[in-house]
Image (cartoon, one colour):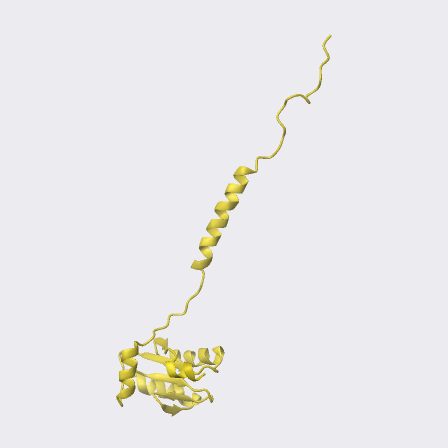
Amino acid sequence: MGMQVGDSGGGPLNEPNVVPMIDILLVLLIIFMMQVPLQRKAMDTQVPPVEQREESQSEGESDQIVLEMRADGTLAINTDPVTEAALDARLHEIYDNRPAKLMFLKPARNRRYQEIMHIMDIARGAGVQVIGLTPKEADETAAQ
């Protein structure tokens, strides 16, 4: 009579196969990594070309409207001072007869994001469609 040993012989061990699982995780990781840059929200801004800006500052009457948010908290449209309360009426006065309702906003460095957004909302309410932010001047950057 031969001695029989149970099932503990050369049977396959019952281990889970982790290789397909790792492949799936890697594919998911790559998919999520590709989606992150696509989800960034950007704000459309238009920057006036440098030549155009210099030329419009030398002329008295320009086609370009620049709303300046000065460091002391005051506002000015093409260097003409205006209060925040009168801003909406003033923008209507300027833009109602214009086909292109384009305005550039020039905030001072110390103005907060909320203040800039508030002024942009007033401008949008007055029917200004495209709002661009003007670049910082070289002399202003050197001075600070």
